[in-house]
Image (cartoon, rainbow, N blue to C red; front, side, top):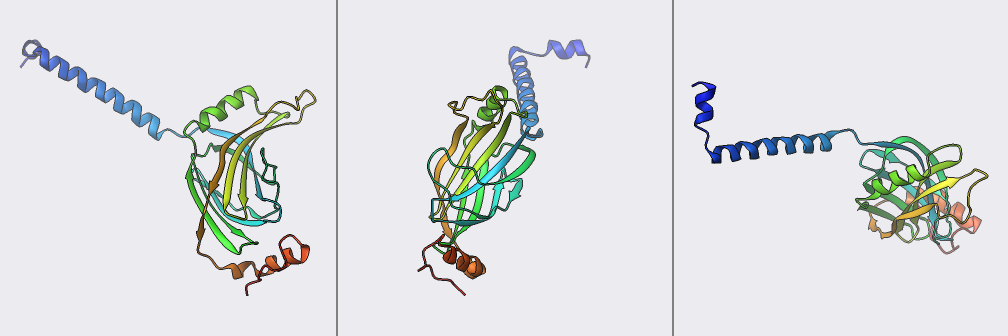
Length: 215
């Protein structure tokens, strides 16, 4: 059959069907490109803290974006006020903005393990990108993810832009909450692994003297 004969046999219904097929193929191509393209990366650091005062923790693991894991280790207790204080800092380099947070930590005061697994807001990357536009990373502006884990099972996550230049406006709010507060679940674990550190914190007065040191 020639091309002319084939065209002659096409009715209106066939044309509509072909158009729908073409649109579907275009949509699938666009969806696949968006789904499998490499995620955009950003240069930022992470600051990890415990709290509130008198509730120090050991952060065993944090997994962001399901791709990179960070162990916070022993972190001091800090104020649980807003905005959060900084803490132990790690430079991440160029990494994606997380869309999920999984974390596990140990409370010295409660001798309890906690685990958290939460999805982060869908518009987080859009908000962070706008802040990179408003405050371009430079010797003056440094971007940081603030992660806090409390000794009573709470967690929080904020974004901060630290400004170190002489032109900085101290009254300008350079932070926003990602997760104001999330409650973790108690988890299984062996508190005996932290016997030595628990005893040290008792002697330092960082936790009450009646906290039992488990052997």
